[in-house]
Image (cartoon, rainbow, N blue to C red; front, side, top):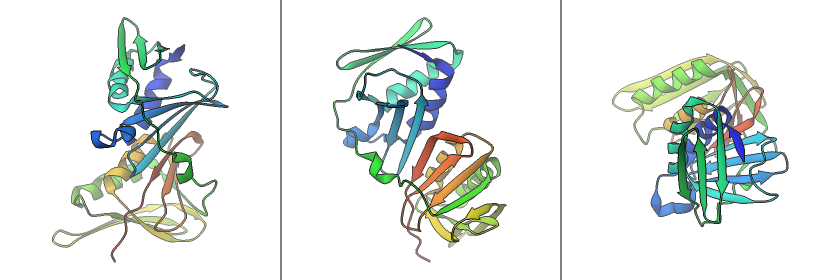
Length: 240
């Protein structure tokens, strides 16, 4: 079975980042590759965030078939894909082999049950904020400089703006404000800034949407006009 290298590279860039590196949680270190009615789906989660990428029209697996491939191996594969061209995938009972040009990469499949990720994704969300992606990414990177590992970044979403606030006791507060539009109710949600930045980086397009329900339920990031990818991130509880 043959895949386009640039398409697969982009999908892996978006998904592998959400896989766990904790070998004590083996099922979460893998990337699910599953046959869907519309094509191929790649899924990864470390339980703090979830990445789902659809490749419509791509038929690598048989009907209903799914395999779990180590995220580390797919990260290595992505380094081989830079030259472009096509990728050939050969699946055996417990191995996957990818051939790219003159190079090949073979890996064992993970004999694990991938978690039921679908239950985390709601059919729709009552609040949807839209803003420019690149300024948001720059703002969250500045916030990350001040935020400690355990310090959440607050996203204060209003009808016309998105405020990013980091409260740190000894350094002081950081506030970034961006133009945005909100459909739904105003809401403030806290997130781990590293996980949030990773999602903003992964989404494609000039504009990004952040869909929320309330401060204690997961939020979903998508690119405007790029529905084939979503990045779900768990909120972090705000103490003030």
